[in-house]
Length: 67
Image (cartoon, rainbow, N blue to C red):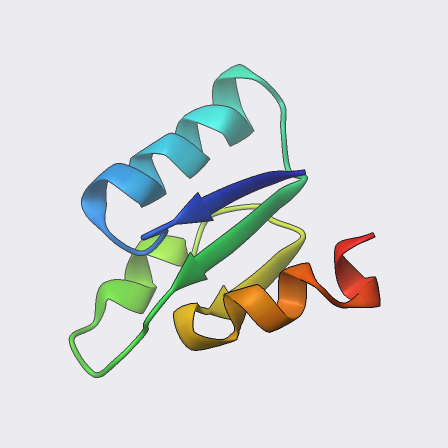
């Protein structure tokens, strides 16, 4: 699994899009702090395993979900 922080931003979403299309990877954990700014729209067309709010990342990584 590949963890991408800042996934809803330009660089993070571009990296995820490239991993989907060029590498065929969808085992992605996307992490960001989504708000009302509309950056969530950058995630619409992506294939990924899970999304975690930035404030929840450490808990997610130490949980059974990360295994």
